[in-house]
Length: 251
Ligand SMILES: [Zn+2]
Ligand SMILES: [Zn+2]
Image (cartoon, rainbow, N blue to C red; front, side, top):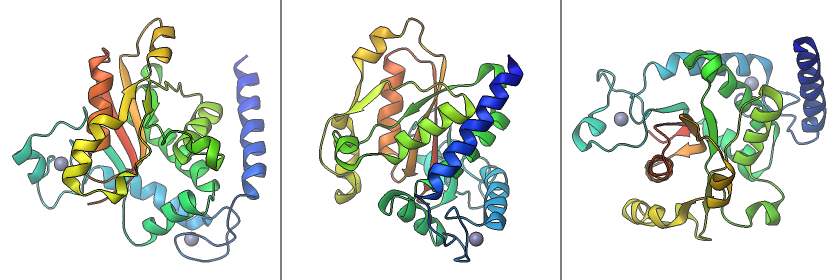
């Protein structure tokens, strides 16, 4: 049975790679050399190494890079904002990281999501016990985005995580507003976020036993308002531990 599972996972990975080949760029997003899946081999190896190394240099509470502080950044020490029970981020949002997000989100290079899903799998397996893996909760897209655009990068990521690595996806949240947060200032964002995310009562009512640990997944951590709002919603419905993992962080 286990062998069968392994073989079917391999077949799924191969088919996904074949499909994604047509959704990728021939240039590497990081170094610009020729690469079939929007990322060359040596850059992808280096990025994986960076993730493990960088996480140790990031604030335990918000995930921003530490500037000589010990474990918790000055801002988190002074403001005591609880974003989640722990925030993890892979890459600081600058230089080539900006290009990666642009290619993934705007140019629809879905092969990026394939790479990020493998990084998330590796990271979560290092961080958590494989018998006690937290359930993944995607930060939901704007309403009708999937219908309009045909896809959403976080939804895509979760599909890879579930079909290729066997993660459980719990779509416990939905988003109600059409407004785009990026057009708002910091204060407006903090106020606005509280009205745009909601618990998906339909999904929750079907769930017999709530997960004890969840990981919220999003693309960018900017002010932390989205993570804070979504995490507090999940806690109000009775989930004791909520972590957050974003691919990029503005720090
Ligand atoms: Zn490269
Ligand atoms: Zn912090």
